[in-house]
Image 1 (tube, rainbow, N blue to C red):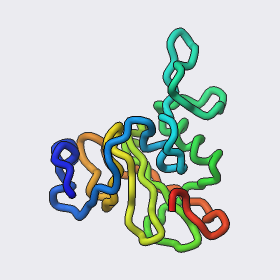
Image 2: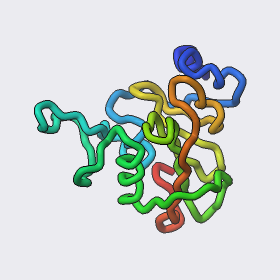
Image 3: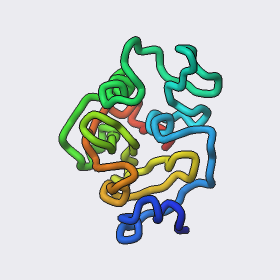
Length: 157
């Protein structure tokens, strides 16, 4: 199944293999999906310094949710470390952060098959290549992180 709206936002998908793996679901976003949480939207939304109900962001201190350092810290808290290796390493689960060197826009995680998967905003979950999502909307892959599989398993698999 194709998602023409997503292809409009990410034209590289038209030339890249991808598949839709879920219905649209606004409950969670790409950050939540990357760490295995499909129950809440992970974003640091505040009004007058107070967190807005319905959004979750780990209590990390001064790290900003809209900076690369803030996202790196979230994933570090979940056991990830930076790497340059995009290949499949069976004993590790990996994530790829898209954006610019300072501003994160999207994150995908690698499945045990080696294919990448991610949540497209409030839309669908997809399996894709890393290059399939690169472009104006999400930017390019700027960081790869990995952590040991927990009990030999990856999140949501």
